[in-house]
Image (tube, rainbow, N blue to C red; front, side, top):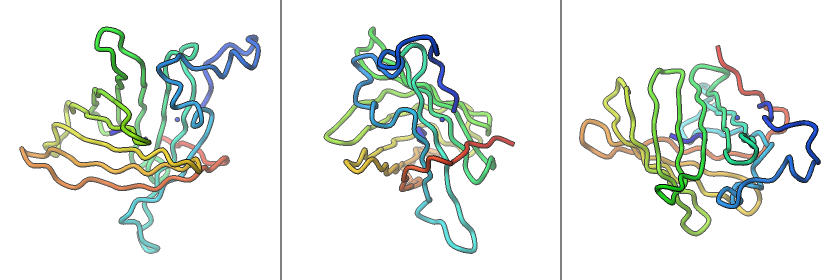
Length: 173
């Protein structure tokens, strides 16, 4: 799912105002660009902490958003690309993981939430679809929750509350 990333891909010679611009269909993400977040999973404990670091960046001259993330310093991670699909007239994303599976999703906004319906390919646990909801909070924080379609049944997935972590690093093993 989108988990909900490190080096900006824009031309350093462009004026700063141009460097940070996103295409009109990606504007709702503007407040999250060039930021790193740390999220603690709802099931995290002091004895067994589980956290995610994610970095959001502008990509492809503002026509895409790239999100890199890693769980517990590289135990698991992935990369998402979000773009506007003119043919579908919708936001779409592609998510690739260190576990070897990937997803393709359609995204839409509902109130202050980003909803993602993802088709999963290659998951060894039998997950074929993920519904993720990311609350984009006014204070700049994010809450990501998900459900998985696993072996034909919807099951509760993860819930992560993210706060900005300027010094956070996305790590892959």
